[in-house]
Length: 157
Image 1: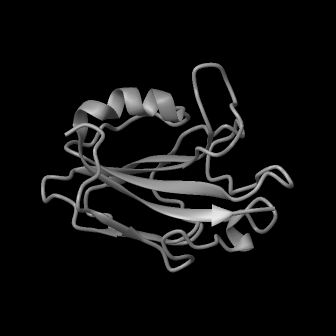
Image 2: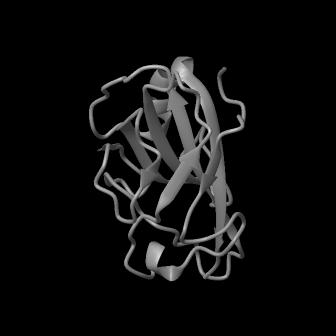
């Protein structure tokens, strides 16, 4: 399938589609990951991954765009919900240069940023090591993506 939206639906009890992300889930608050739920994944899904990316952020490194706030993978195929502040799965490295969730924290006065919480369904358990960047993870996962969709939240400082 590659990278194309599917009929899988991603929601959160923390914010609606295109809604404002509560400060609790930001760098100005408790910086805790929001609750996420997904439905409609293919029965063949053996594992899931979650990525949070802000494409509105200024360029971070040559050859990339935006800012990566979360890379989470090795979630079992039976997973349909991540609780707030989850410890499930394996964390990759964010553009904060740390493993684990790092919430929205756009520059002051930079306007509204959009945060894409992507859920990827994979056709196998890749059993990947901790600390992969988003790009390293995607390079390994792309051939195994069978469904994906996202929830977009907003935040402004």
